[in-house]
Image (cartoon, rainbow over all chains, first blue to last red; front, side, top):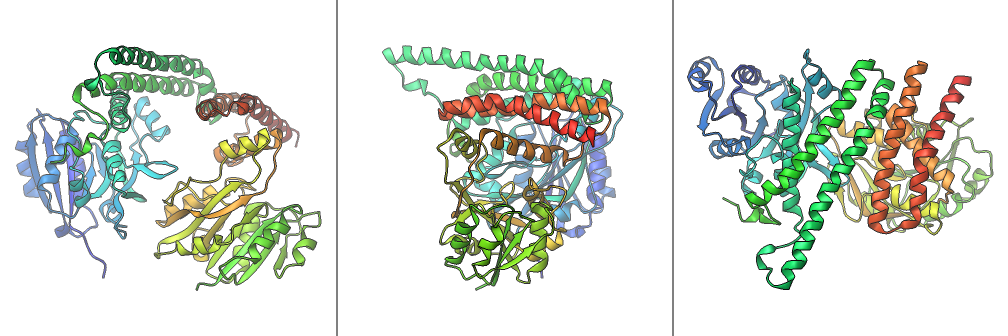
Length: 335
Length: 286
């Protein structure tokens, strides 16, 4: 007989009460056996009195529902808190703006048949809305599936993924210096892959996500992704160690630094080329069958998101330095 | 030992087929049956193949690579079906290495490494750097897809996902089938120890048009929106995409210091745009 895992579902949330309620309801109606999973909601310092409402939810809810509170420290820290108190062998992550389909939990824990598999990711589909911005996100299939390159699955999207608890504990959980939403999932998967673990993708584990509805939010998301990218890059590659540099060498390093800053600025030239490409992109969208207005809008949004992503990378480089990201530092921060 | 069938899809491959079949005959792993699927060749490929102890199956007209593969999977009775392209020469241990990878039940396919024999001319060098059909020198579990040139698949999975899509005539059918296998929840493995040599020789024109064909099938599956304004817009829009791809080629060449490939990278955008135009006029006339 196949083993049925005990699963802990962790939901970090911040000021998102209405859609959290929908998420929890969808999780209570899973096809998975009711006594085999628990739902852990970690309140990341919400200011909308979530705790008071929660007592009434717990009374109605048919499965184990638990609540933790922390000061506002970001989703990475919230997830770590959840992991600390989780009972299950498998930990599933879902975001508070997602709605799970009935069989989601059953599918997302299916396939741990190999010791090397650390996590399984699923599909994130878009909920239809009236806003053009979220229609655009749905059209480009933003975050729909795990990112893949020629060495296999690079990272899973934590909005819809499950991990083994042992693997999470082995690498010390999420890095809490990621105090913004975005970028913590490539980081944790990068560290798992360093230990030789691999990931799986299950198409049938579907959650529906409400994408960002305002331009401001979309750009902020991409800015954060850029920041996360820079943090990870600082961790992967290191150019110089300024601490040990004295005397004449210092001058060489100074010139090198100026050079690298110039190179970083050169990225803006790339942005100019991207800007010139907007009309071509628009034509391409039009060729795919969109209306003229939509194709121009989508092409400009393409540019806008690239722009804010690159600015995020630029700022993230300095912020990451300030926070002390450096090469192979993941071993130092084990709890 | 598992019983393995091996098929060789071929179309006008008289220069290569002899060496290919020779390498198949001297494999260290015992092969149960060898099928040569002739896709309506009009040269003497078949006469050469007849000299070897192989089963020959002929299509009456040219139906494309995907159709040849499907024929092979329909004809064979063994569970494990290996495939080797007609312009490839397998190493002595090739099949042995591939078969050793089937360690668990959910592994449905294994692919090997393809290395180029000729990379002295500019075109061949370009093919081996920018169109290399391999995933490096390690074992990769769940690579994005398995290249079709040399693989072993289980028959039941190909039947289960509904055979190769014959709409992709000779490009992209391998990517398509890999994606479908992943979607049904199975695993694929790439093993670099299993090595195969590619005998193909290219001119600049042929190498660029091969790449264009690949992109063409990848993006549209061969289907475009037929309204004239949409079609022209798509053509112009593609230029930006070709430009983006050639930018990557430029960066890679500058990094690897293979400067003699830069002119081809430059030509890429224009030639692809020209092929787009040609394709469109051909469709418009028909």
